[in-house]
Length: 98
Image (cartoon, rainbow, N blue to C red; front, top):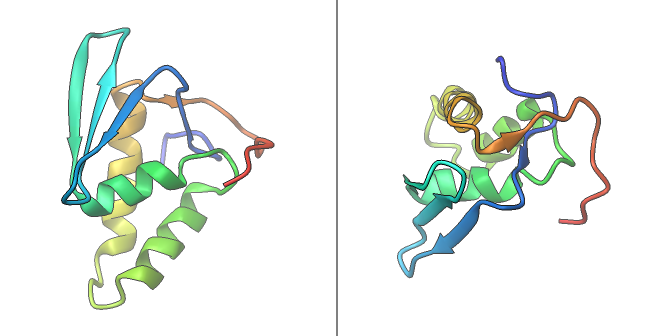
């Protein structure tokens, strides 16, 4: 897990939630868009700096108990969000209210 202990969305990344629950993220720095499925949209929403990556994975696993891979999928998505530069590097919880 190379991402920050408390995954936090960059505030300048535009989030467009679509009617089907998927999301389109637009990064104004790289001028690139990123599509998230419904589970990915939920993970992105949890990235407010108040939960650790493991806590986010636990929440996702609890929401989707029929998917035994949800924890791993969540960690992979967090890694991807970090590698693409969409997350801030916070090692302590933020004061964000969710």
